[in-house]
Length: 97
Image 1 (tube, rainbow, N blue to C red):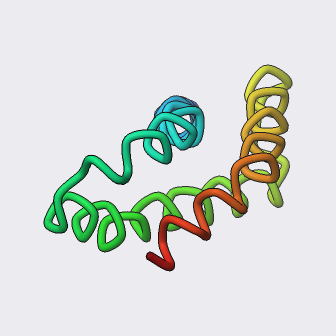
Image 2: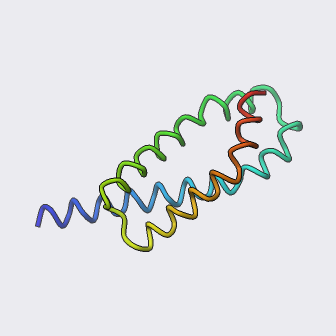
């Protein structure tokens, strides 16, 4: 029973990370479009807080490496990796400003 609870908790964490990261990476084009309108503090907060997203991605990478993702989660993880590849140059530009 404890293993089932652990598996359900892990599945929920994975779903939460996927939801959050997909939302954040989908927002990168909008962030880039509005970047010049943001004040310096908003830009700084974005840059300083971005590593929180990296931590979540590393956690997903760990679970994926253990083959702990369901088929649906694996598909969403693949979608996330595609978004990252697509938007990485834009993000890198924003983080270097």
